[in-house]
Image (cartoon, rainbow, N blue to C red; front, side, top):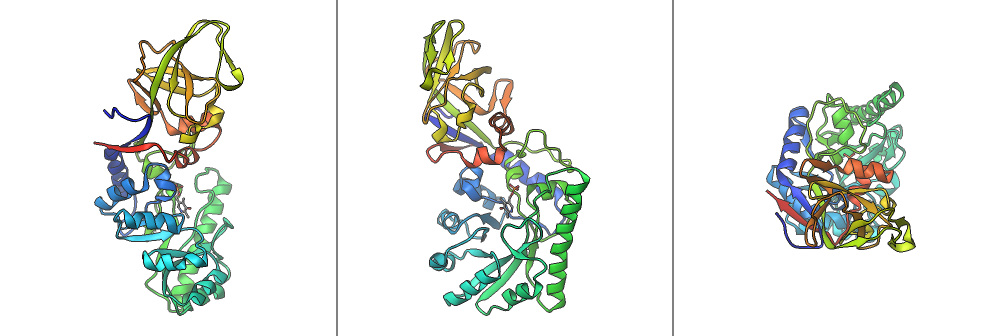
Length: 373
Ligand SMILES: *Cc1c(COP(=O)(O)O)cnc(C)c1O
């Protein structure tokens, strides 16, 4: 077990490999995984995770920004790296220098790339109904013009589903419409003589709920890390995913809080009876949501320790009265297993009123990331 550090993330690489196998079994032959390793691989650590993925034979990755792509190149990632977001024209040189594949976010962006004078490999974003990035699916003439832009090598087109996580007829109809719009664009491009470009549409929920689709890539994010966005989410595919990340912190000090005393900023917690409390070396700057003050739970010694008082930037307080003989130097588990108990990222997200994607992607910079097994 890892014994240093004030607060850290443990990555279960066996679980990551397991999840990759589950997705490969689920996806049709010919559809390759293109993991989303943006936002520091959803907080897991982009370099560590991407190298592990590369060792498992993964050759395509997607990131949010050119800077994230550069980090992967510097970590030794050699395959295709697709930048899903906007890159400023002044950074176009970096796209070329680091062989990053840029998303064409709309037709006018293609003209900006052309004006730069350098040659770029791109995927064209197609807006099929989310109305975020991408040229509108029904502006076929504009899409064709992007394909005809002399300095662009269009290696792919892609779109993004916005309600594929939702059950219910309306959401399913909308998703089917998005799928049809996307297929229409691909077919029209083929009909007009453009060939050899890849097509991709599904993120995690697109894979898990519409696994019969057969595109060239599947951009798995959250589910590849072994968790779902929401605790009550149901998916169609029969997959067993295992969480990769555990979040742990040190118990810095253990002390008494006597009946009637209050603790922490604002003195928002008062002891109704004598309490044994622990001070943990982790806080909201590490990604623990501050709104878990007086409501979150952590695990210590295989027991539950409720969060008491306000979560601080670098520290937090927990009630150890029910946790047995915890002492300074022991570890506390904020996400992961302790004895028989487990707190999942989905639990923390639910307590904080958000989705696990946000919890994970906000894991702090200063947490050490350690691969176990
Ligand atoms: C983040 C992102 C993904 C991955 O989404 P998950 O739901 O985490 O699988 C896929 N595609 C695009 C365009 C994204 O922005």
